[in-house]
Image 1 (cartoon, rainbow, N blue to C red):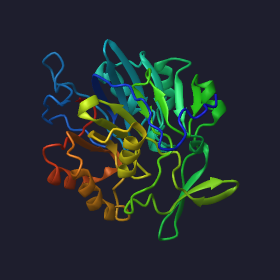
Image 2 (tube, one colour; image 1 turned 180 degrees about the horizontal axis):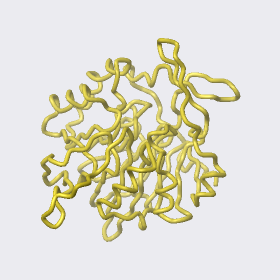
Image 3 (cartoon, one colour; image 1 turned 120 degrees about the vertical axis):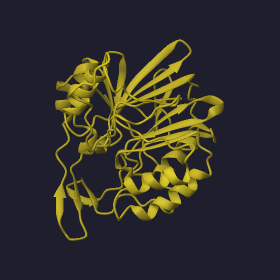
Image 4 (cartoon, rainbow, N blue to C red; image 1 turned 45 degrees about the vertical axis):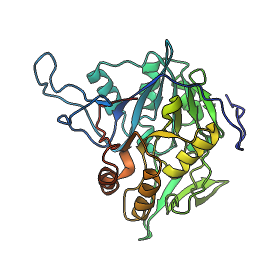
Length: 325
């Protein structure tokens, strides 16, 4: 079903319902460590079950999948953001953690890359036929990368619309902002590019009208939750549009200037992206964040710098962790 954009991409304020609490459970991320300490903000999965350390453990992979639970008064609204790289890790980790997706209202795809859609069929199966799948139409288009060495590689084909429907998904294509969870969760839709230092993903190509052209990642989108006086929480998949662009747009859409937390993939990994690390950190430091948790494609160097420059707000993520706000 094609959705009419609920809000035109202008400076119109979206009435994002205030949430009373937020829980983000990492179903898949690049990193897993069973020995990380927790606190009131981040709860780690137990090392032992019934006093015994199991032989198996949670699986990490180069991908991202988050279970987002938003509490509004006596209601809880649950969605899944992204589906990891393979069809193995997400269902395995759900079973290991003793979690189900029966209450999930929707699955949101941050963009169409393979490391965010791998277990999509399994997630739809677990959530139940008729589950809403929020996706930008560009996610269906073929993609490739042209490296500076002239090597060209192609991304795996994205599942067709017919295939997604066969899986039981209620496909809802969005370009603009969209409200879910009785207006308590905002999907940004296309993110405007406003910063000077965030330049996308050089070498990325997308096939449009029969020709491969530079990929500007129109399908890149994030989630936004409003915690009232504490501020906004911005949750990104890869932030190919730029994590600061995503945060700025969240603020523009909601009229809320205060940012509480920034969580997810910031795509600052690799030599091409590393020049954006320091200006991103400088802008993040201005926001007086309660929490920042870089994940997935942020990269070791950038993650280390965030830990060094923002030690009070920084939280190292790991598979199975629960971030509580």
